Image 1 (cartoon, rainbow, N blue to C red):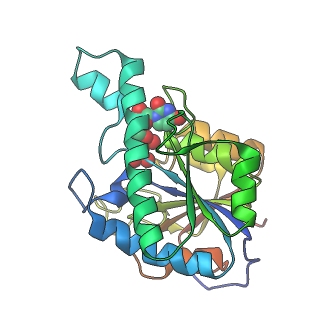
Image 2 (image 1 turned 90 degrees about the vertical axis):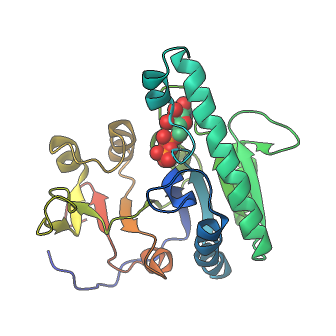
Length: 249
Ligand code: UDP
């Protein structure tokens, strides 16, 4: 496969997964509003183009349940996961604020009820917001412990009938090997779900890949830090790596 651009159909409803790391500076933790504002500028242009956009926020910049429970034995694992889910709400609030400052109408929906901070996630309401041109930020993952926001992204994408899951990362796509360890590592333009699972490529968690595979929901893994990339992916340009059922699809 080549890097040539080809005319792909544009997507009309998109589920964008923003990991917690996109809310902070590289190598740091917490929240950098400068980073959030920069993502918001790209999102604003996508929203202005009329594409319906739902965003699932991660929380790893603040806390990941599995890691926290393993280093802090005094906490029960489910509690740690609930803390992780709450971290995604903190990110969701930051993103909502930045988007609203940029003039983008938004709604924040949470899988864990917290009136006064966010609407509850209600599928039909979420879809109505999208149809009205609001960017919907989906926080608190699935609302259940022991899974990640990758899984939440795959499930929500199905629920709202998104055309694609966009996984925004800091690398240019999926590589056969870690590009930081091997600068000559090959990047795939396209790869099948099966190959991602077989090769144990760390793209999204396996549950999320399985879910997308079962429903033939394409995933695009791309570098959101390259200016304009979110728009390019949504326009159907060959950016990053597409994960699909068969390479010719
Ligand atoms: N989490 C959870 N259930 C969910 C989604 C997330 O328990 O449905 C917890 C889990 O502990 C996870 C944390 O929230 O580690 C933060 O999400 P994630 O690790 O997916 O964030 P990211 O890696 O995308 O920054």
